[in-house]
Length: 350
Image (cartoon, rainbow, N blue to C red; front, side, top):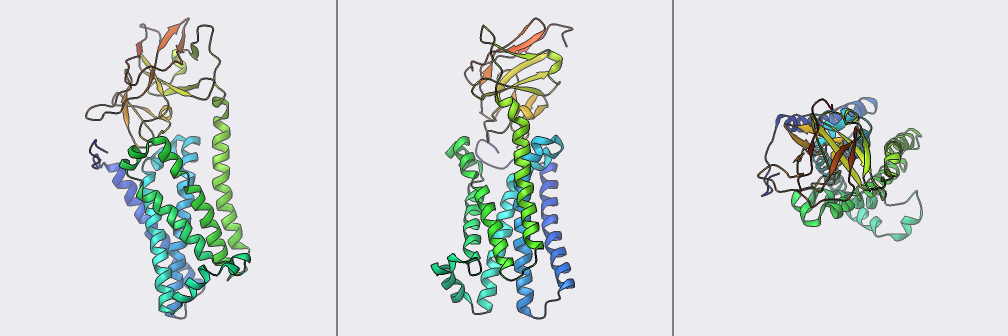
């Protein structure tokens, strides 16, 4: 995004990402309808209408499951980072598919002259006391409302207006939407079908999302304990070669603050691990064209001072670094954003 919030740098990767996403949606819905109609051919227009409703609903559920899996997958394996790059497009597309599903539901009930019945069920509070009569549409409406909130605030204007920390906290509601959607699908299908396949598939999807987040969090758990400072307050990072070229080592100070120590040839600099855009894990990115590039959305910063290249104005907190006894050390006391702090290593050090 530019400083004026106008979309720029629409590159080949973004076009391919969206092209694959749209193609995947069309194929999923087409294959689902074809397979279902082959196994259980619809006998009327009403049954075709129900099939369309289910196709878009299952597609939206599958997409939201994948959206929530992308984050931990990218943290566990860098090969998933390209999928993470435009995840907001994936999320907005999920809302669009879910909205089409909701519209098709309304049209179906209208065609069957059952809109009044559906509305009466939503306000029949006694129906909420039993699984057999629970108005599962209410869960779908609540989930769609959360997805609408996520989609409507996905633009960088809201990110900057709310601040990254608040914006990120707000978007954690996506997990609540997923829980509501699991219950919506489960009740909607199981009130009509008694097959154990449906709860097994839903349970597998929910378990996959949960397991990936737990494993990713457990893997990062040791880094959260922090490295004890030395007598003078500095923290040992390791020999220069322990920092991969064009990449970073992440160290945590007591209290959980993470510092990304990057090496670009014989230049070493330390910055906050939080990208100014969405608090993304900057240390998991790499140096491209001389700039540290966040793995989430490609925001870039100069190694020397943590400033974004012109015309962008973002600036990151930097930290002093030094080479002592063949070991790179970092001072955990932050400098003002945009303060030059990188060093050049003596010839032959790396």
